[in-house]
Amino acid sequence: MPAAAFVEFPMVGGTKVRHRVTRADGRPILFAGLWDRWRGGGAEVYSFTIITAEPSEELRWLHHRMPVILSDEASEVWLDRDVGVAESKALLVSPEADALCAVPA
Image (cartoon, rainbow, N blue to C red):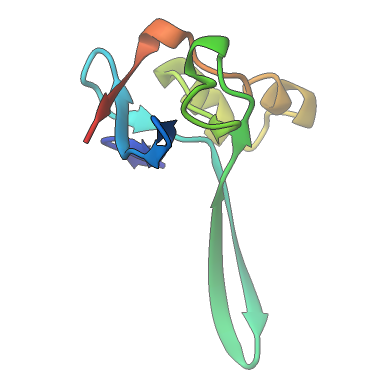
């Protein structure tokens, strides 16, 4: 799932302050996600979720979890139907702290 940014609302001085998180290099963020299509109540339903993981130590002040962000190479592996569960799980790690930039928005 590509995105320009995601938003968190950490407590700063007793007040929640909106912060916009982007890649430091300005490129799109690639979230690890899962989707499914199923039938419910006579209709076809599409559902989607973004996978989260522990944040890096440097970004823990934002939130206790964060979306899994894939590198370009990891996104190709994530989307490959022939990749096994163990290899896919290995991609579910926090990005390096210097890869992301969080600023008040």
